[in-house]
Length: 365
Image 1 (spheres, one colour):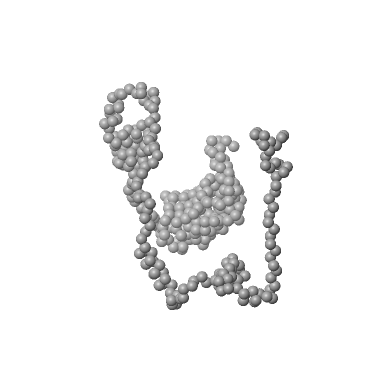
Image 2 (image 1 turned 60 degrees about the horizontal axis):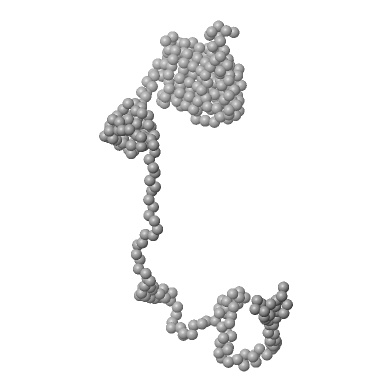
């Protein structure tokens, strides 16, 4: 392409003849002999020395902080440094100085458009809604009446807990309408159970005499029975042939009494129900009781739960599994077991005993 302008003149510079600007040569810096540094310093004027002393590198960590920058305060000190006085002076000066005037006074302005909710068009159902006599009735009804109506129709989500249960029981709803807060109801005072008034001495005498009318002895929750009296009750079971149910729950029974009970059970053949819950019987003593029961196998229900040593241990539980597996008459066994294996195996054995009893009752082998 011909490098000519449209007017026919040539361009002052073309791509082939463009001149490159030449940099000026850097003047050589004369080498400074450090031996003559003193002479150089003597030749400097006081102003040049002042400028030289102020030219330090503040980021040079090799210099001590006091030498990184010279002191630029030319004023002579007026006295010793007092930090509190300096702070008081600065605070006083800041309070006395007038604040900067605002370029524009504050005026509350609302900019932009004000949001307004969108009006949704009415649906066809609302437009076609026909007024009935129920509309006037519901409009004139009070809030308490509407709450009753919601309870009758089953709109439980509109009611609180007190209103809900009052509606189920057909009671008067008094809870302040739909916005009412459920209040706590008064506690129903339940009277304490009457104390066990069983005469222990008389019961022991009747057991020794083998009274035929005494088939159920209840000593539950009698706290003042001595250990000697409990042992005496257990001793009478060796010769008694009429007692079928013995309840000794929560009588502070210990292993000493439990071992005497095990000895009596090994000879007794008429007792069917035994309850020794909520005492202080250990797992080893429970195993001894179970061994004694297996000798005659006449007991049908045994309850030994809620003892003070709550954890029996795997050894005791496996021993109970083995003993119950050898028993064919025990139908109910009340105890808390820790290991699922022992619990399942005992449950299966008790179910088998119940099935065998049912088959025997209906006349099947």
